[in-house]
Figure: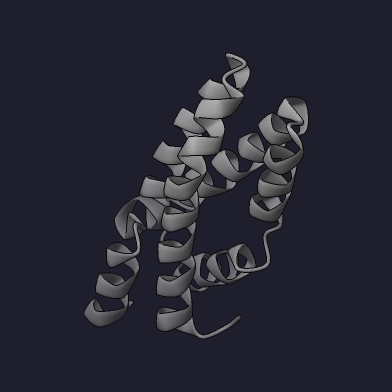
Amino acid sequence: MNAQTQAILEQGGVDVNGALERFMGSEALLERFLKRFLQEESLPALKAALDVGDTEAAAGAAHSLKGTSGNLSLTVLFERTTAQLAQLRAGDLAGARQAMAGVEEAHAAAADAIRAAFGEG
């Protein structure tokens, strides 16, 4: 991976070195999975569940997004979804709703960086 691509991804909250460790150094595999992230449906599901007050569904979607972001070393998104999931598990729907802006911001930053680095996928 060239330095420019790595810098773009890191600005979007991707721990490139950590991700490459997870993917056994395979840049092609990492790129493939980062592009798949662009089609990931957990964020819309999380928003929809929060909109209707379904804490259980929101927790499921947050857990999925947390796992995906952790596996891809999307560190900012992982940290924010981890905190939001803790709120949901504690029954703090209002706090989880308030945290949604930060989750969306981190998700958008990661997605924008992936698109800038690799295209739409």
